[in-house]
Image (cartoon, rainbow, N blue to C red; front, side):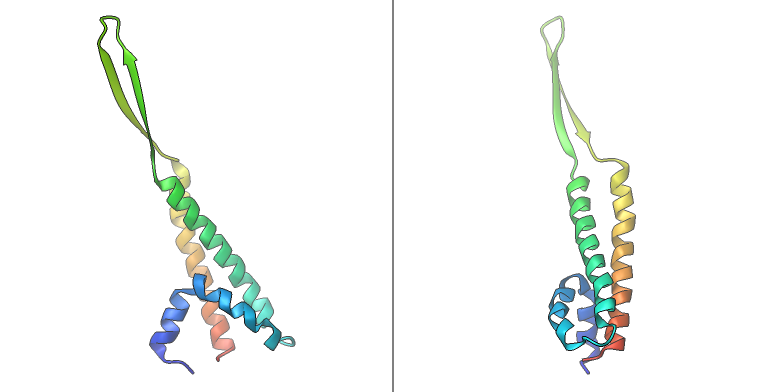
Length: 114
């Protein structure tokens, strides 16, 4: 059994540490280790996709819009555009997927201690 801080950091970093557990699938052919690992892998993929989309869509695009008036003067405005509601949705779903994956990961580690 590993020390509590090591187990905590292993569980907290589950989106990274889940990939190394794929090497243990051959050791558990007769039990439900595979059935417990597959949803965690799916959660990790969903977490990384949501996190990447959140980073991409949170960065607003700035566009310079300019024009020339009838008297010859110029005006330039900077318009900031963001993805809008999708950022709010991703801000909700990303932590929920992380918490769900953490719960699945810790439940599997309790059922199959090393």
